[in-house]
Image (cartoon, rainbow, N blue to C red; front, side, top):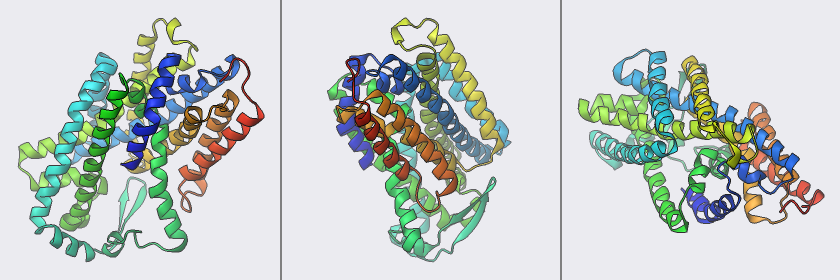
Length: 408
């Protein structure tokens, strides 16, 4: 929640002003706005490619989550569930564009908040109240479960009741790096940042700051509570930990309310996937094809075609059911956060940032994030070293290649 507040408080006003002054509608376009023509093109192309790859992975995670919800609630085949989820999102995204996404997100966010408030209250009542829940949590034993091709270890009661998860030494460092490092990704998520760029004025940013922070606190607290209470009430019978919410809803609630909980899960998926598909599509039609937004013809149709293509790829990846949702999300979160977050902060807050520095920082951050995640992720969460490496690289290169008359 703190990272969301910081983003809206400090980054949002500068980002909105900068993108408006340069008439930029994409993050790569904003980063490249003041660079020389050759560097500008390189920034936009590399940025668009990162967005295409990472957001496709991200969207596949959303389809996976919705597919599991449909499967658990209705007993449908998993692959069919994924296909239905994709059709829902792609349908209104293609027909309505950004305006449809914005309006549906309001309804979806409201539905999600209702779900993560109502279901935990019902579950607390079933276990005998919060104090009884704490007592039962302490008695839980560690469990290892299989999710797709991954083994997922669920902590025991002693670890869950500890602020540091029962970790010590290097394990504690790894634990802290995850929970301190994940918020860094907020500064580099294109599908979140374009909402800031689209705000009308600073007054709208001030309102969004309050709404966003409160919403995140409620949503995350409720989701964590559902997971913990599901461990107490159902244990290993849930099967897949990522099905805890739909499983709990089906077991505890009347059919209409259980349907409402399912709708909340689908809403969570839709509200993320639709934005990601739009951003990925605009990244191709605006950043890869040309360098100036006001000279584009047929960009809308190309955008729609790419949205459909990316949705098909994401559906195929999700249907394979090879990774847990959280693992897919973190993979994309790290790549995007490291590629865009550090250089965007430098561009907005340090006047000596140059085009070559931005390009070098983007490449360095992305490469370090992916390589680290594949090799040393168990020791230290990948976004931390990638973020630092990108900041240092962008700073050093900006100093080595200072701005010329065409750059700021």
